[in-house]
Length: 224
Length: 224
DNA sequence: TTTGATTCTAAATTTAATCTAAAGATTTAA
DNA sequence: TTAAATCTTTAGATTAAATTTAGAATCAAA
Image 1 (cartoon, rainbow over the protein chains, first blue to last red):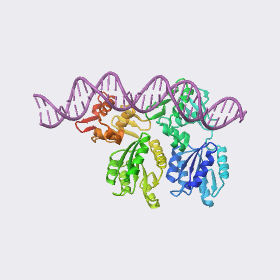
Image 2: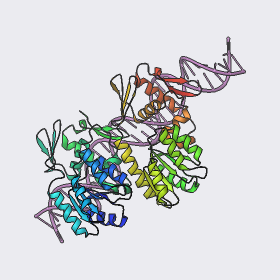
Image 3: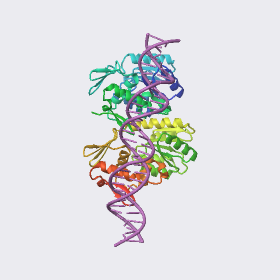
Image 4: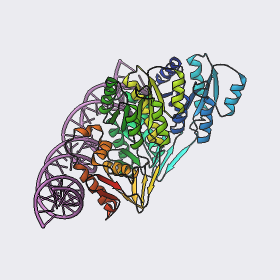
């Protein structure tokens, strides 16, 4: 699962990240309103954990952005006070749950799971593109009717490509999306080549026809 | 990626340059307000790293210039103090992020990446000029409706020309933009001829009609 | 803990882009 | 008008990037 943690208290932010990463999740963080809005607007997260008292602006505005962009991430609001107005306003704007500081990480975790379970995040979405069909619920991708047995990374890669079809995606961008902010620390992105190669092979005998190489700049999924 | 580092502490300036260059980026530097404004106004950078405490003037003025010129480089502000006023004023004027001295280069790097992610990713701009159309999202350039299969340098060159149409661009300026300050060290700019030639050939049978030679001073893309 | 699958590393190979060099053409200035 | 400087063009050498393979390290499930 992929999370965005929009929280400007660095200690709390880090505890949440550490906690979620221990379960193998991918976390990205945002410390201010602008960053949170941008990331939320651009990327697809499963759950966004949002402090509405970010110094730089109201977290509620981030929610509005999300709604406008029709993003379907689950949203859990963190608030310093338990004023009912805040709570109602947040839930009104489409938040899925609400938690008041201070809280135990286990408490947050169980709400995250509840939101995920509710399936509100990915829903029963089916992505389709030409001969390719992806059932996001079962995380299965089909080509010409046949399931291609993709590994987790291959599947994520394919979904990322299809949801950005036509756009040239550099190795760095891909790495950042599939591996999260940690990828800053990686000294090489060469393993992307391997995943690209494996995915292409599983797609068809001629998978390169779908994933085009933009020599020197990245890869792009054919637009049409 | 192309960076402008506007920082007058030479040690810090050099560390940043070295750090960014290690990843194959192109860096230019400016040590005072005038130089920074000028370069920022004329050239297109991906990210500008700007010390707001430049001795010769306020870095904030550089920001204002940028806004006036509608430049779309990401801007990261470096400040000696972490006064909130400075921070808010900077972000208000269009800076994308803010970092306080002293900082680790890794920290700067991850902010740079965040800014790039937003810019590169979100910017699906279409540039148009007469019969030429450039889709920056897919990094594809079309002429008379047909895609011309440009290499990376050719594409960058064409974008540089079109975003500076009407202006005579010397070989040195072009080299500096496409290859960075390192190009100072090159003993010859002759390879530019080759790229110009290749680009012209790919544009039309008569590509020279778009890219005019200004004998002795450079090239310019026709104004209209 | 063991097993099997997945992910990453490393290196050989292939492919494409970029630059060098050199010969011919054009422009400028003496 | 002519020599020098600058630009055009081509071919091929050089370098960089991407592909591919095999296997090591890691992770997850039984």
